[in-house]
Length: 208
Length: 211
Image 1 (cartoon, rainbow over the protein chains, first blue to last red):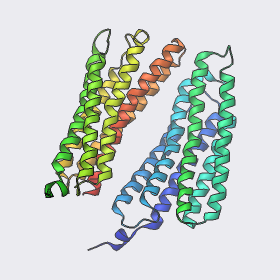
Image 2: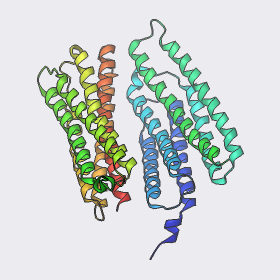
Image 3: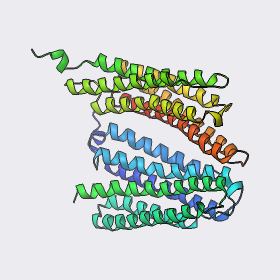
Image 4: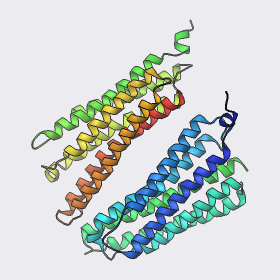
């Protein structure tokens, strides 16, 4: 028997998966905040790995649905690109956490406060944008995208200032190498949020 | 005279070319493994350059065949994606060999064998997966998914190895220049495993579409 539901689309399911994926990103950022705020030497990676693993399952399901579903609510390549960009958020956060844990003895006391605040803002905006996509609230998406661009640009400035302090003569070289790696990864988390926002804005343009 | 064979597909040719590309990728990893296993390893660039060139030639043949062929069993973009991903494996191997050669004095005696073992296992799986494309159809999906899961597992092990390496490099026991050089080299090895994972993912998606 032909399953028309399968052929003609499971529109809601796509949005549900995308929202779930964005929420896993937010979960991993919340875990990151706790880890960096506590500043303890013993860091558990479980929360990060769990969020990334759940996101992987969501993304795999989304990719399979894109192949097996005949009608999708948005263009296939947009859904695929958005799913991929969202998955990279908890993946990059986990990468940061793994490196932060092994580097802790060398960088104890280093502060990522400014970058972390911007990462939190970025993921919050992305989550709202993904939710607005289901509602088809295009005006809202435009405003959120502008905010996301501002956060991303501010993050670039923060990174440049941070690097400036690392490049000061006399700054311990190994510590500089490690801190640069870690701050680049936080920057990448914001870039992945920007990528997700860009896909959503692209969808907005196509449908306006 | 219009060649219907030309217009309506030469699927065997695509399968031959993709299999050739996967074999070249495996060959370049094997050459790297052999080179690095020698005491006081010095890598001869010729073999890596040739493997990458052979892969490039295959990628160009695939692009040309896609332009000339009217109907293909596999979707065009899937063939292109797989070909592009396979090409990146010997390209990254060559990049590693170049970096290794210019930093030989700093990396003398460093053991890369754990990464090489993972890479050899990953390229073996990629060759098998690409070979399975000839028998597309029902019944292939479970086997493709199982191999893909194995590749993901190898990639996870590669990520874990990098963390172990960084823990040592960032311990303060090594000179900073050596830390920078080795991190660069280990990340290139990790990237090769990532490219194998990408190839496995591309094959699995093709199998899923045709199951």
